[in-house]
Length: 264
Image (cartoon, rainbow, N blue to C red):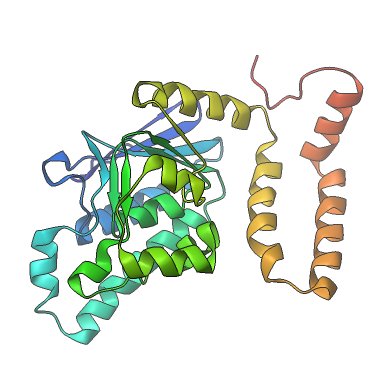
């Protein structure tokens, strides 16, 4: 992958892991149209990295992502419906791209995630927060709703909790975000790096193809009827059993050795 410089993001690939950082700490990593474009471009490029095993998303400074940038909002408020729709579709496409990315996307939530910033938490496969991180669906406070992020938040926390927090805009701490299922775990802030690294070790010990299929399984089955999911899941496991990775994994287990995807 040719190294590309972005104005709103930093990234690097180390040992098959892509580390992406929102780097607008002066505005608490709030996003605008440039962030949306650059993040979309980066994920498109990362999709070509065949050896990639996971992506870690975090923020520079004290915040993860404080939602939409105020200066961007000043421009948005004067735009036509068509102009707003174009930018909203770009954001919706980005969230879908991250949610459906072939590798696990890990949210390292180092600080506040507010408004649309919570969307970047919700589209992560696994999110781990520092205990001082705060979360809020604050859109209703300015007469808006968490629209583009809504589908992913509802998948994470369910309709009942989504109704509650979308309506109230309550500001919650990491412990409550964990309790409702918005994040998968929370740890002391100084243990956040360690927790993410431990998670990455577990991911890298599993088959890359199996992980990609596991993501499809988890997102697809809840929307299927019994008549649909029975043949879908039976075909899925049958294909994996005869795949190169499945054969290697099962043989490694039977031969009491590590599979080839685990680097020595």
